[in-house]
Length: 256
Image 1 (tube, one colour):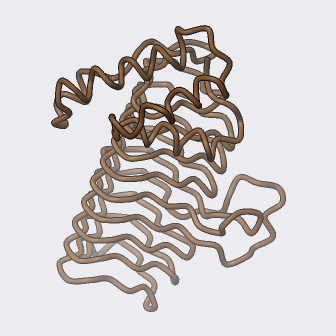
Image 2 (image 1 turned 30 degrees about the horizontal axis):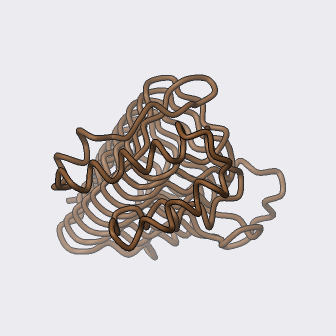
C-alpha cells in the first residue's frame, strides 16, 4: 500500500491497510491508524498522530513546526482523530509550549482545500471548513461548526457548536453556539435554524433558542443582564445551557 516513490521513515508507525501515495514523505515520529489513505505529494512530519479511516489529499503539509517565532524546537504534537476528509493544500501545524503543546482535530470533520489550522488550535467533531478557511493560533472550534469560504479567525477566538459563518467572514471575537455570523468584522444574523433542524432539534427547542438569541442580541440588555435572564430560563429550556457554558469561558468577548 506504499508507493515505491514514497519515503517512509523506518520508525514511523503505520496501521493496517494504510495507503501512502507517490512522492509522499512520512516522518520519524508519525503514527497513522488503520485504513487511512495518504494521497500523493503529502508531507506528514513532527510528532503527529493520525487516527483511522482518514483521507488526506495531495499537497498537504501535516505536522510541520508552528509559524511562531517563540517556537524553540520543543517536541509538541498534532493529533488528528478518525474519519476526517482533508482536501488539497491544507496546512496543520504542531502546538507550542506556550499553550497545551498540542494541536487537535477531532473526528468526522470535512476540511476543504487550502485550510490552515495553526498551532494549538482545538477543533471538535463534525465540523465543516470551506475552502481557504484560516485559523490563527490558539483558536477553539466546537462540534458541528461550519466556516464559510475565506473565513478568517483571529488568535484565541472561540467558535461555539452549531454555528455558521458566511463567506469572507472575519472573526475577531467569540461566536456563541447556534449563531450565524457574517461580515468584516463578524456580526450576528440569527440562529442556524436550518442546520439545527437537520440535526434533530425539536420545534420547541428552536423556539427557545430563538428567544435566547433575542435576549442576547435584541433586548437592549447589557451582557451580564442578558446572561442572568438566560440563567433563569435554562431550567425550562436546557438547550440554552451550552450558551451559558460558552459565555463562562469566553475571554475575547462575543460578537454583538
